[in-house]
Amino acid sequence: MKWVDKHHEFDAKAEEIIERYCSRFPCYIFGAGAAGKELLAVLKYYQCFAAFIDNSKEKQDSGFESEKVISLNEYKESRQKGIIIVAASEKNTPVIMQQLEEADLHEEADFFCMDDFLNKILPIISVYYYDKAFIHIAQITLTERCSLKCKKCAHACYAVDSTAQDLSLEEVKRSANIFFSKIDFIKEFVLIGGEPLLYRDLTKVIQYIGEKYRQNMSVYCIATNGTIVPSDDVLKVCSQYQVLFRISNYSAQLPRLKESHQKLIARLQEWHIPYILGEEDWQWRDYGFEYVDHGIEEDILINTFDQCGTICREIRGNKFYYCVMARSVAENLKFDAGQQDYLDMLTLQGDNYKKELLEFTMGYSDKGYLDMCRHCHGSKAFDYPIPVAEQL
Ligand code: SF4
Ligand code: SF4
Image (cartoon, rainbow, N blue to C red):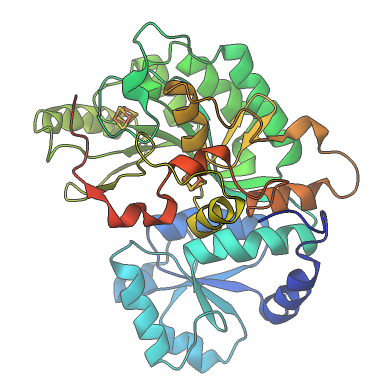
């Protein structure tokens, strides 16, 4: 979307959302599990958490994360006002949403799924109601080097030499400092690559960001391909700051990784570090960066961008990128495109900077699209499923 009324794009919508939802706060989290725990920290930050709802009798009896867990019946019978946010796995979310509809509760009136709430509702409420800047997910790419060479890597890391320069430690610190000088709270702050466990100064990065900003995030996370077991130094700081390891599971394509996963998980358990090993049975989608060309017609590019809705923001120094894939593919495949497609965090000043940041995060910019959208299937990438992690 093109900016038409910068700093005021959400004024009307914010009024409607605040009237409709904030008057019904607090929020209940349906799902006393891993996703619910991630959301709990967010809602506690805004002091709008009431209780968990869960179908498990055991959890209702024992509570979860020292919080009360009630049944859906109890919620309904109490006639308390509230908004329910469904925080569950991809598989269970539609089942719970169906249960809520059957209980005469309605999506966007009485409940939301967690992603919709964190992407579309809370960022607006956060700025307009709480005067805080909130982002769902942002990443720092520590290195583009990787221990695998996936031929359809969405960051085109296969084109990066093993001797390539990583982001310097100073630049990583600067990125985090600039980011957190403008963002009050983030649901998930991710260290990514390439393979971030290849980054030489990883211990220092985790320590620095953890010490200064751990209280500004719900989830502090490393996204790894599961090929590397970190050193004790890395494990120690990950344990200290409860860094979540999100392990991508490529073992269907690369069976040897099962053994690496076992070794890695054994070490994480030893250090009491949280982890999530992805499903083995999944598919990638092909964004088509190497062969798509939509041409230069503005309407087509804006439409491709607007339909896309990727949530993968990236901070790199003072540059805040809407799409980490667009930035990394353009650099790694040496496209002459997108060098200006970022928001300069250092220019965010004055009373309205949170609104500008909100608008950029929600997809507004001067052009209304990114140069790399010309070379991308965007949301249509779902129509191009490909096997996971095929190697070159
Ligand atoms: S493991 Fe991840 S970062 Fe590495 S090449 Fe494969 S997709 Fe890219
Ligand atoms: S359509 Fe544009 S914003 Fe979406 S993934 Fe592709 S390059 Fe990124």
